[in-house]
Amino acid sequence: MKEKITAKIFLEEELNTHVTKRKTEQLNVLVPTKDSEVGDEKLDTAKSKENQKKDSEPEDDEAPKKKQKLIRKFHANGDISPAYNFYVDPTPWNEQHLKENIITRGLFMTLVAPSQSGKARALKKSLTEWGFIPIMVQAVKCGYELTMDQMLNEAGCETNYEQSMKQILEETHTMQEKREHLKQALRVQFKKVFGRRSLHFCGKKVVLIIDEIDGIGTWSDDDRMIFLDDLRTLKNERASEAVFVLQSVIVITNYMGKYLNTIMGSSFNVNDKVTAPYFSLEETKHLFEQYKADTNNQVQDEIIEHIHEQCRGAQGITQMLGKQLDDLYQGGGVVDFNTWKQHYESKSLDEISRSANYQKMAEGLSEKEISESIIKVFAGVELAEGQADKVRIENEFERHNICIVEKGKLMFANPMVERFVEKSLCVHHREEKPIPNLFHKDGKVNFETILCRAVKYMNRISIIKGTKLAVRNNANVKEVYVTAFNAACAKLLEDTRLIHKLHPKIEMED
Image (tube, rainbow, N blue to C red; front, top):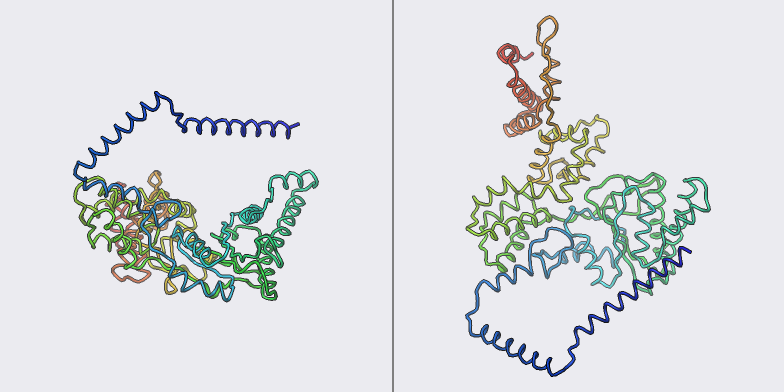
């Protein structure tokens, strides 16, 4: 009965759509009557006069400028299009670093690329030009079944995930049985579509792109092992078959963890990964040369170099700051370096912090373990080798786009990120608490309490500023923490009436 009602609703919707379309077509067809002919003549005459008037008027110099601004702009969100966005073409890099490995060698590749760089979309475009069918999906966190369903749907298969789940729910009893049945059904279809002798793609070769592959790090060990083992099986079969539909699998991530390894080894080149670059200074200048040519806005070289320095070539942030610069020009007036610098220091971070990348950072910084460990990155101090989960914490820094590893050292991704982290720590750790009792019962100063409470109750900005000052002065590790501690105590003591009593004691450090 329910299916009949659904079918009826569907037919009614189709009928309404057809009627609406027919009415629109009728409105667009002018039936030539006497009145309409007269009306058309008047309309043509009016249009002719208007065109003559336009031809006789001098051209407005601003018109082409406005038209071009509507066509091309800095990319703030969504797919990058060379027709509508200022754009640095990654095709030459793809040709140099990926084409040979995909076409000739058919490698299963790991591509480490900065988030929101447009690398996945650009790769998809290149693959199409090279004659492949690119299928791009994202690894859904905590969702093996949803990821596989997405992959098969992108390949043009009707998986009917909800219908399959409904049938499985009716035929099985325990939740474990339900998941196992669905998992097996998806695995069988995946191998059928992408496996040996598949006719699904009519003889064309396919490259599978799995973006944000680090999402499988949240899967259960069993799900992750099954997923990677299925890919390994396809890779092994491909090596033994003359004709095989799956040419290559490329996984994209912004950090390398252990999630691509299983006990049998990885089918991906985890030890020989390909790292996509950030913008060079020349590429950043090329981006703004396009903007200057389209808008006639003369951007100072000093502004462009400052943007590159603050972003360190990160594609997404460069585009966002470019959009902010354009907004300043749209507001009128001269935009010199001082104007830009004032905007950058007062407003740029607020706008950029609403982007997806920075929300991901904020999510990570809200976790106590990450926020406490990041203080050491400010200090330029490596996490202790003996510290529990050292590697995991460093991976979390990278996964949340906070840090990168450069020459074996963990550091902030760029100065813009450093500013954001500093601000976020202040927000997350600002606590309004009563001033703690700093004395023992016998009236002596409890230095342990000063240390613990100062770090716990103060605004973290004081520690950060003190730490950064120590690092600039080439202080050693001990001096770094002494400086940070003194900054914490100073902030705490400023808010108490005990400062005169405690000051001499603090100066006498043991």
